Image (cartoon, rainbow, N blue to C red; front, side, top):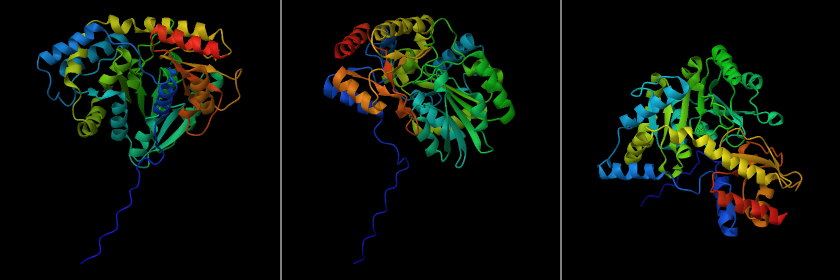
Length: 389
């Protein structure tokens, strides 16, 4: 009888990853009966026309695997939308890949571009999926903060100073979650100079592309030919069409980069929800739903900000996304995670502490509200806040 071999130790590939703050705060919101303005999804339904397109796709038999790169009609519709809005003509067959939401597009793109030992610049505060993607690829994140003193503007000199011979990729997210910052034309010009000098790759997470306020156009990186040839532009239908649960996004990139992304994509999910792709392809034939999205959310932003103006919260500028930041210094000197829990227990409203979007604690007494909610939900949250003051 031979002795059994000892079990091999289980070593985590992501030892620093636990339950996300979004899950934690949502669970606390349920426990305390709080209005959930923390997690970033709508509490209202998508357009009935889009629902009918989905039902029609199922009835038409579009229920088996889609092509790995995406349903051709949807890729063509994405290419047409991008060309009309931003003036860049992607080849629908070789440069657009439909993914299982933007998060999967980010992971597949990072795994395709980043090799062990490469450095990747990320701007803080940063969305929580970026760094795990880099670490799984064997890369090293290099953190550069947005300038909080200038409403979270990108400091391009500081970003360029962080580039080394090991830098492979710079990850961008504008309109920016959680700050609501948007890019200006001079930001694209600064990026062009950086790319020209250093030839780094760019990943541009633009899932809030259609939620830019006050009549300003979204400055997609694909507007610049010099940037488009070095960039993976990622977007999602979840944020645009109130369908976060459908998990359909896409990555636009030069053909050589798209080919590498597709190699990873095919072994992560292979294909994406077939009837949903057909539904989006049909729905995109009418541009009004996405062209009217900014006005739809601007009304909600203005309603919620006006309500907060009657409280001690100091609202920070919000030029895009469906999030708004507020400084609570006049109410408390507690750290952000502690005050976020106070918001749930005392005020009956769930929020997200902005400090969790940083690698190291960076506490400015700022919390994030999500206003992608019914007006009645926003009004209820405001009533609760006023009643607790």
